[in-house]
Amino acid sequence: MRGNIFITVGALAALASLAAVARAAESVTLRNGFEMRCHHHTEVEGRVRLYLSAGEDSYIEFAPQEIAGVEQVPDPPAPPTFAEESPIASPAASPAAGLSPADLHEMLVKAGNDHNLDVDLLASVVKAESGGNARAVSRAGARGLMQLMPGTAAGLGVEDSFKPEQNVRGGTAYLDALLTRYHDHLALALAAYNAGPEAVDKYNGIPPYRETRAYVARVIHEFNRRVHAREAQARQSVASAASSAGNGTR
Image 1 (spheres, rainbow, N blue to C red):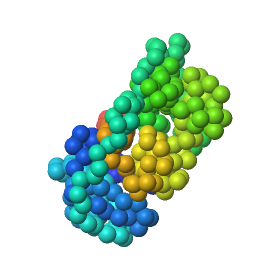
Image 2: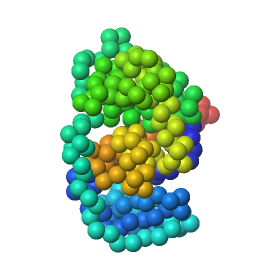
Image 3: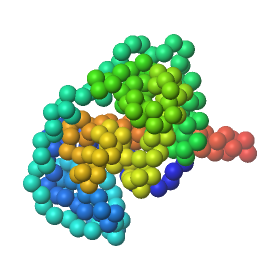
């Protein structure tokens, strides 16, 4: 799987607090030209942490050489009306008949393998976008499991966004392209998936839209939860195997 996704796994749990109160105290310019808004920053064990709220549990971490400059800034502009009025997904019907969690997982594994993306990341996007509802339709007209707009779907070769296999294939390809565009910076790629690359490029970072900030937080929080669960299960398996081996030698 992609090993250099530009986000600290397990760290970004409360970006939603920024969405609710969008109060950024600092503007951090990265060497790649992008700008990140944060509440405050500090250096920990040779890494620079950009904290997304007043607390210490939600941050993005960078190497010092990746930071070009930090300056104090006023509050970002209020989100435009359209962001307030566009929910991420409004299910139009119940999930497609016959699409079990196992079926969906198999689709995500295949798509993840094809694009070298973590299946838990794809599952987190699906959960945030549609809740696993293959017939979901947003107010803006995005469709299916990964909420593809008709124009985006057509450009990705997706003929029917309500067909789970096509939707997952197209959505994964789109996310892969965005990660490549933003140099594996996961937060920026997710923001572009939600608000469009034009908005990310305009603000040189995550746009100050409540919906987009909440969306990025929701996906990364779920991704973190899944990764933690996976790691805990792996540790438990190793411990069980070691215990069994120890008992076998007695």
